[in-house]
Image (tube, rainbow, N blue to C red):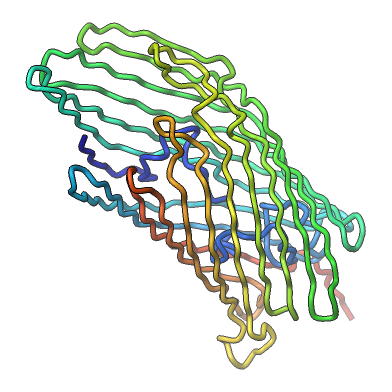
Length: 413
């Protein structure tokens, strides 16, 4: 078997499994920390990963946050003792969010965020024998799922806050496998399509424990509801040789899983924050449509598996109030992440993912605003195993957080 890769908007053959490659839903302030943020509760950032954090925003502040990213990926595959490498590049606008104080002790956030992405194009050639020749499969796919989010966080008491995100999810995923041959073997094409119009609900909690004057511990937890998406994915099997088409449809065949996450953030002297998160997605209990042994397109229980993720990150600022030395007001960030796949490949687990990130939070100052922040981060991600395609990804993310005091009252003497 030999393979060749083509460039698409995502560049990942692994995005053909499940509903695509799960998107990074963290904001720019935490991307240098590998996205670790469940326990982070700051009034100058928008943390959509835990809606309980929205209640930290004060009554005078209006926050806007937007992010873009670009990445370069190297694919490598060993075949017959030879390693083949192909490079790909892509860029994207990642998200936009806004947050403000709605009521006393209640903050609100709205935004547009990704959920999953699909993008791949590659070929696989199989030499059968001298009689049947070579069969070539061309795999292509695109699309993804997105969400418009509306969330609120309520500080019930001084240590305890609760929150909820309600999202409208939409998007279309497409995939195709086209088979051609150098002999008289029939050419077939399978075309997959799924269109989603549904919702997503996530609940969050944060509890603050003051260890002493200079140290604070915030515990965070979230629960995402799993449910059917109301989508009817289809598969068309087209016999190119005979111009014959068979269409399959799986009624209400897509779901999202129950998701549980816990985390803790230690804050020291308003200079250092260290956050550690653990997330579990119960994809193993979700059926997903696929071609079975008899060639039928039906819902199957063994295509997906539970996914686990661990993220650890740190943010350090030497002295945010030092107005003479700029470098002491900069936030320095580091992070590590480890993720297991939520899909199987030929009955075995897909590749695990390991990531390292670093970044800077650069304060922006002018005559009327000294609270906005430019966040720049770099991330290296390794995805693959010895018997699968390996991806090495280098990603640059840039985010801009506008922190405006829109609701301050003017006083006239």
